[in-house]
Amino acid sequence: MTLSIPSGSTALLGPSGSGKSTLLRLLNRLADPDDGTVRFHGTDVRELDPLELRRRVGLVPQLPAPVPGSVADNVCFGPRLEGREVDPERPVRLAGLDRSFLDRDASRLSVGEQQRVMLARALALEPEVLLLDEPTASLDSAATKAVEDALRSLHGVSLVLVTHDPAQAGRLAERTIQLRDGRIMR
Amino acid sequence: MSTISISLGEVAASLALVAVAVAVSFWRRADLEQDIAVAVLRSFLQLTAVGYVIQAIFDTDSLWLVVALLAGMVAFGAWTARGRAKAVPGATGPIILALAVAAAVTLGLVLTLGVFDAEPRYVVPVGGMVIGNSMTAVAVALNRLADEMHEGRRQIEAMLALGATSFQAARGTLARSLRSGMIPLVDSTKTTGIVFFPGTMVGMLVAGAEPVDAVRLQMVLLWVLLGAVALAGLIAVSLGYRGFFTDAHQLREP
Image (cartoon, rainbow over all chains, first blue to last red; front, side, top):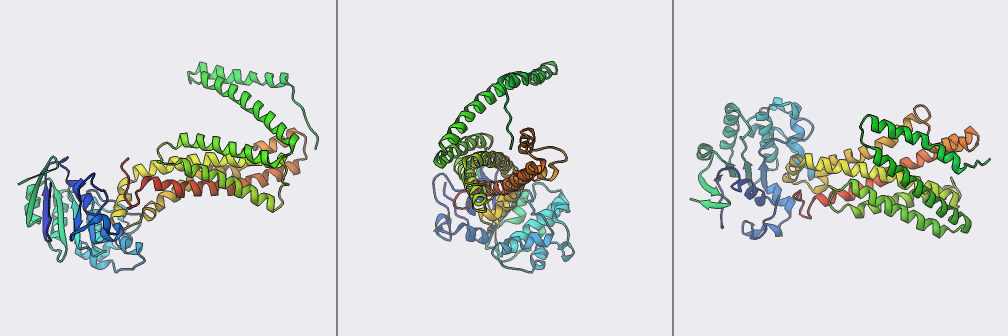
């Protein structure tokens, strides 16, 4: 199959097992395809530095996976890997949390709050693209709304959203691509 | 130092305690009778064989034979540790290197510092203890590494997704694995003389040495082993984790 994802917001919609998450992992090179090529701005991703690619193409995982420490520690984690310090307040605010969260222990937050910490953590690297792997799958409706509100208010970053929920695809994405058994359905 | 000799009859008499172990296992259905029999037979054959080998080495007084014996111990120790760390991909090389370097560095240091003379009667038993303890530490550390890499897969991949290198993503896991490999020896060093009497000290006391000498030698050995185990664990873990990742800092499929 051939698939081209333009900038803006795109939803990959399909039932579980249709290869959505796998496809997402190919885009930031957490995995490589058995055959075929993945290109970013026309360049084969295997020719790019994988670490640089992952900073430009951020990922919010399906389940939050915070590192031990405070919310600020989590948000600063990515930049610190390169020896950079950033102000964690801006990404935390973009993710729909306020600064009172910064000193709280990330592992003690609710799953919904943790998921917004994951979003803030990805945003702290100022990526061009944000990959979202069923970002609300484990959240209740209030937490889902909070995450969706944060995502809708983002500017200047392209979104690639994987979801099984057509309504969510409609709320968050300008265009939707249907997947089934690793194939594109229109 | 006075010497003692033990007759085969005395050795055979100690089998009474093996009979106790077999009886307990049979009575409480621990299902270990066969393992105990194999263990006793193997210990008899292996120790008898190594006794002749060591005797031959002492007779020829050749350091090359000592090196060959230690190399054999490294090979066998690596094979054993490999069996317990099956879930670590490509671990054979790191394990061999860990045991060989730990043995070479600790023995080299101990000989250079003049703690022991470079004679087979010191190098063989000390080398054997260093390799044996390193083997256990490496097996425990790599086992823990494999468990953590499996259970922490999501966390590690989340760090990779933030631009972490394989090493940065695995750093916490490596620290905990090294720790679990070293802790048993650290703990037994802490409690030595109170909770248990280590083998060397027991051997020397039974053989008629002065308690002061027995205690000093035991201290030296425990401290040497701490260094050896730290080195072996460090090398095994630092090289072993690479098998879980590709060159592109991806986690391999399990």
